[in-house]
Image 1 (cartoon, rainbow, N blue to C red):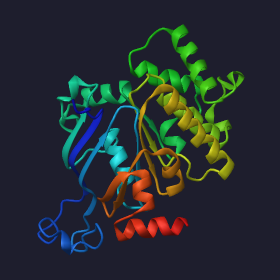
Image 2: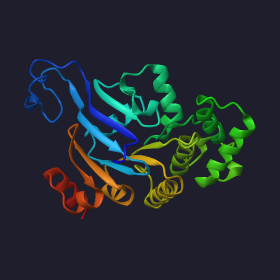
Image 3: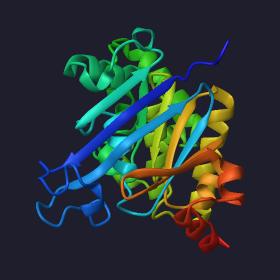
Length: 278
């Protein structure tokens, strides 16, 4: 029997703007993914992806390629223009989550997904304590027992190497690397089957980047969680991802096993990315 993906996206499109007669039916008219006539940006175009249980899917591309917009649609921070989105753990993968109601999307976001943003200010309440940030995510998933939430918060902070004596300290007092680790702990609080990581090492010192990447690998190995990791840095993708998708101007231009994509790139843009790393 063929293994079923735990997460699946079909023909997803996201545009900013209404489009015009020039760009709607003539994509060749676009300058990259931008219409010079009406100003519409086609951030994601006909995106298809699958993630399997315990797998890390890497998405790489330059700034403006659409990869972060894709992640925002998966976490319902952005509404799509069109497309389908299924999670195997929600209604046996029979509900198109892009067309689901707000309540259903919130339920999925709180219980089945974890998100780690590039900017920790988007994922954390900076003036709340670290353990309160974790409790907030658990309360959103209908946890009510304070003792259980405290125990879970301490367990997760320990797992991401935040000292327990700093559990009641606010993330605004932490370094960038520590803030990312608190974000990861918060994202894991409800044991989601899928973790989304958007440029989590950008702006961190190299030694701190290495610590965060090592933590992500350890979590994936210990929890067997599925992940989607977005980065413009091929060394991050090489270290983490089993499979890799390359995005350019809102489209997926190449995909395959990470070693295959990085060692034998087929598309000219992927070749340029790989050679720039050498």
